Each structure stands twice: as structure tokens, then as C-alpha cells.
Image (cartoon, rainbow, N blue to C red):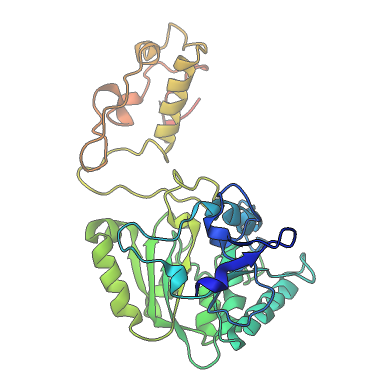
Amino acid sequence: MKKFYDRKSPVTGEDHRTMLEPRYGGMPTFMRTPLATTLENLDIAFVGVPYDGGVTNRPGARHGPREMRSQSSLMREFHHVTRINPYELARVADVGDVRFSKPFDHEAVSQDIENFFRKIHEAGVLPISAGGDHSITYPIFKGIVTDQPIGMVHIDAHTDTWGEIWGSKFHHGAPFRLAVEDGLLDPKRTIQIGIRGGQNFLDGIDFSLSNGMRVVFIEEFAELGVKNIIEEARKVVGDGPTYISFDVDGLDPVYAPGTGTPERRQHVHGPRVPSLANSRFGSVLCRSLRRTQHGLPKPPPACSCQSRWARPEPLPPLRSDGNRRLSGPFASPDALRCPTPSAECLVPHESEGGLSFE
């Protein structure tokens, strides 16, 4: 197996192993694996799919494969706990990116992806792909599913089982709905983990539930814990062929802020406290702190919340459950209402419709 990873310098003729070279050198490939020129003798192929034409919000995922190649140069061979070296178990290589014949034509791109993955599947090689937005998964399924529907472990903030949006059903929020409708994905062998965030309509979640998918909302995930969810996933997918799909927005955006559709991870352990990261209340509080810290003008003297701006209380330390217990003037949105609003005050004020922000 080790000989598979040995390479010869075209200049000096010296043999070397890419993974043992300094991590700042060499051509970046996924996890420092060899760049393959053929599918022969491969067990696993890393594939880049640099396409984000199916996004409904912020683009940029097209740069994912290149950046993941660079960042994965930090990988090393052995796991420190299991002492397993996966590269001794399989022949793994980077086969490059899917090439798009018409990058601005979504249907043409989908066909290119399907054809690319079908060739990998027909060669008996297991693909691991890096996108790209989630719309790439539907043509991947079409390329690798031939005999029977497959199961799936899906980690995401969204179910991605929505219907038509803005005149198209081919977008990053629909791949698994399309896969179920085409008989490519078995919904009863599918588990979706980490689902959260507000919704404008519920047909995506309802589609997953009504078709028998196991949907684990983030609140249940936090309550049951990682080990129990892993056991649940094993029971759901069973022993049949299973696809693993990981969407980066499944992470809290504090760790992956560049995702196009960030959804804050709800902290549900212990007493509930206001979120300082994802609410208008938190936004106002943060703005007030920044104004004070950077010497910006304070509210006019007529504003009764002057003292809170002049000397903002520091956030209390984290408790053992990962939450902060707020007290004093920052205990709740109600405590931050200013009874004498002014044009320059950013604290929420009373209005007929509830809170207003000047």
C-alpha cells in the first residue's frame, strides 16, 4: 500500500512521499494525497465540484474545493486515539475537479456532474466530493445510484427538501426532495441531523417527515447528545449502501461564518437566556458596547440610559453548561428599553407595535 503513495521527482528522480514532506510545500491536493491521472488501482477518489449556481443567498462555495485542498494540507496520517492510518487501509487519490462545459447553464452543469460521477462509479471507485453548493448532490446521486435507492446520513441546518423556488426546482434547497421523487434516495433510511432556523414556509420539513425521514432538530440533538444520535443514525440507515452529506451550515456560524445560509446553533442546556448573537436585542447591545469601546459619541444627556452606555457591564463568565447567566441591565430586552428615546440612542424604545429601533 505504501508504494501507491510514493512519488518520483521529475527533476531529481528522487522518491518521496507527499504526506511526509513539509506541509507548506508541494502542490495542494485533498489531504495531501497523490494527484491521480487514472482511476486504475484506486479505492477512493477525492473530487472537487466548484459550483454554486444553485444558491438562494450568499455565493462563494465555488471556491470550496480549492480552499479545502489548501487547508487539508494540515492533515497527518495517524489518529492520536485509534492509532489508525486510513491511508494504509485504502488507496486514496485526488482526481481533480469536475469540468463544466457550460458553467452558466445549470442543466448542463448537472449533466457534467452526473457523467463525471458515473464514470467513477463504473470504475468501482468510491467518491468523496467537496462542493460547491448542495444542488450538486442531486446529479451526484443520479451518477452513482444504479440498482436500488440508497440511505443517507445528512448533517445540515436545513432539510433541503423544499420544492420550487423562484421558478426553479433545481437549487441548493431541493436535492433530497428530487432524489426521493426519482427513486434515488430511500427516505425511510434517511436521517437529517441538526435541523434548525426560522422558516418562511414548512413544506420542506413536512416533506421529510411525511415521507418517513428521521429529522433530528438541534434541540433534540442537544438533549440526546452525540453518542445517542450516532446510535440512532446506525439504526436508521441499517446495513445498506449509505451516502453521507455534510453541509457546512450544520456548524454554528461562529465556527464557519462564510457559509451562505448561516443558522445559529441554539443553546438549550439549562435556563434559557437571550441570544446575544442572533437577535435585534443582541445587535443593539453589541453596537452600544462598540460605541463605548471605540470612543464614539454617547447618547445625549436627556437619554436616561446614559449610564448604561457610559459603563457597560462586561459579559458574565460562561457557566459549566456553556451558557452565560445575564443579570442587571442586560438581563432581558425589557431591561434595555429606554423611557426617553432620542434620535441618537440605539437602545430599543417602546412603540405602539412593540419595540422600535432609532
